[in-house]
Image (cartoon, rainbow, N blue to C red; front, top):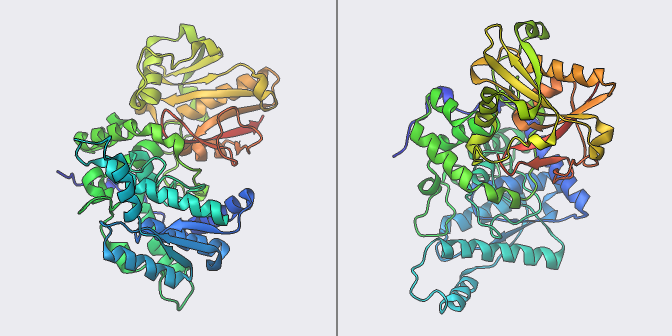
Length: 468
């Protein structure tokens, strides 16, 4: 049973930022090819919205003559999807090749039949079709030197709605940080605003209005496995972009059953995130509802609010129970980390800065780590900055950061760095922090631009630093 999402739970629209997002994605595709030394791209065209938008962006980035589309229909593929893919390619002016996968799929099933004897067909056979397609994409890539662009979106990645070594193949994911509903918004904007004046919009209304489907089984629809994107995307946005806990989402009016279903499925699928290709990032001006504190809140207060809090320094091994509970509840609990695990890493040392109000109520905390030789040129690291949910928007994060930076300065160290969650980038930029490049990886950055995906949270992070 589906749950209606209240109007105030909708994802903030990109609006006028669509143009900057379009320009940024086009430029990032171009840069990805330049860095890898490729000049041609290959895209699996399914007749769906995701592959259509990726093809459009690629054609804008390097010209349609350098974009190759591969159609790989199966027996369960609809005729409309094939026709829609051809129509898109024709409008964009890109070359296409068709390789039906049914003979290959049948050969695989026949080879597996003795081993699968007595077993009924299930998701195994569905995923096998996706893996055949991934194999074909990589074969053409190897043979012709074409750079494979992945066509997945952020909703699918977070929910695990992708096949390992199948439709997750590719060297770059232009839509990797766009939720499905945002894909539609950007596609419609480009269709009506950005594309060449006087030319028929490249993405047909048939593609824009068809029910999303992986077409791996008869009558299969995305909503049957995930629920409607209009319902799950606001939950994913609230949790993975805004950093809100399950409890916060329910308090805001999201149905408890919906929140639990979405976040449980996302947690079970989190291991797949490490196999996702590098994703294009949204430009900072396009990030909606940038939060004032590391874990979210309303408008930030000025540093004058620091006088409302007393901040004490505490060693990790002496951390009070309420601080431990706050750190665990806000940073780790929703991501499958057990309370008895060493999530605190007390052996790493450093010092916690704990903020309390005049009634001694816990307001937030942050941690200053000791100097590390691997990051010596970047000074000291700040970790685990968090505000109590009821204190967000009251300047707690600002007060703690002021104290942390002051402590670094008193040690005569000229700079500080941290691993910032995506939803906090705006807050740190306002404080004078800047993104670090790939030369400073801190052992975790997995992309050339310094971005990495936390294996615990699935949330994009980047290294940010500041000179004091």
